[in-house]
Length: 543
Image 1 (spheres, rainbow, N blue to C red):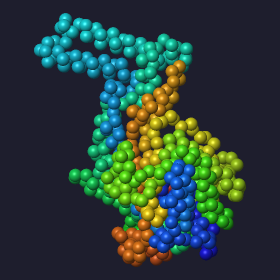
Image 2: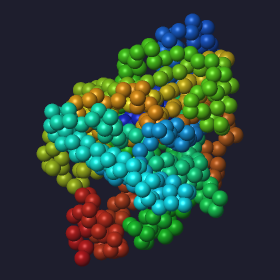
Image 3: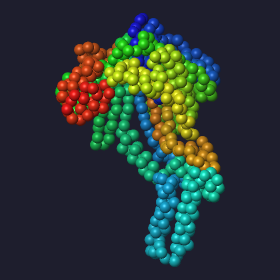
Image 4: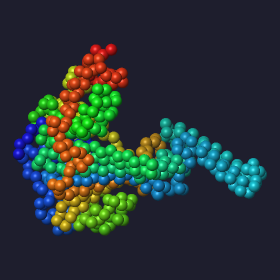
């Protein structure tokens, strides 16, 4: 099958996003449409080698690579669910490690005040005054401790600029102040409880759709719901991707009101029940660019995967998933535990960041070697562009590639952390990949290294205080059913975008610019348009 190769410029942003399970699916379309065969998920009867291979880490890595590569050529329906939990922050707090103040500079005073308040409470229970002679020794001890702490803190502050001064700081205070940012705070616990009660538990994030490379399309119905006792809200965003023509369609209703309020005061209801068409290639990109993006994306994924240590992979029994800590979300675990086989990959946060950086480097090198005309030699190239040129597809791709290069050239050393990134993959009895699950643990805080003579905490020492948010993303795959509608909440004649039910954003933008050139629009929107390079010349005529 043949297709236009100038269609997939839009997919570079997807290739740059971490923790996005749909990246491979969305980037596959153009490559498949150039002649590759697509395999129907429901008709696939091949037995996976993983089902019979010896269950070693090496076998797990090989079997998973084969399954993921095979999935690139399959049509399927998918459903994704995202769960965010802070249970670790609520249940793994070491009370003995908890410190009084939120900032290290307030530690000595806050600790003294809390201790003095406890002494007052003790005196009251005994019907005495805290200034009674009975408490002289305790008051003196509190005062001496406060003075000792203050002197140690001042010496520690001085030692950050002079390592030799660190010798005068008592080791107990040195260790405390060096790692203060990692310590659990009483205020943090309160914030975690509020976050859980008022945001995380009522929140639900899902997406569903189909991926059909042979038909040259992919759909997504993204939804976010919030259900609290006295508040119920929900928003759905239909997305339709036309791989053949390189177009992305977004449902216009969701942004029509904002647009009419801030930009287009004459819009009315013209966008009602319409799609917004975003053509990703305006003809300025090199021929075959879209196909090369796909090839470079998969090449970078394969090379970084190949370099991954075998020790990151293993087989796990499905019935052991229930014992994972933190526990899997209740509504995600049943489908996962029903699998015939599960392969796991676990990476440290540092390893995961390196994997991402290596991917970007390989991707950028391939594209830059193939299309040197898309690489800007220096910043003066951007200055030389006219306003009209700054928003072409070519210019946008050049800026995206410049961002990639900047990320590769300015790689930041990862902060030491005990957090892990875990990926699980479930297979049925025929060896078919049925779901994949990504768990990312975010550290509670990111501590900046301090200049000190003592080493920072080890991973085992950090583990108790690194407990932060846990993000669980489950994506399930199934055969496409002809009876299923991609967008159940849309009218039947709006399921597939076409010229009659869509608004071309480029054409609309030209009309709106002319509207402003004629002196129309609100004061706020005139100001906003004046800030856009492509509209600057137009709005200069508006008084």
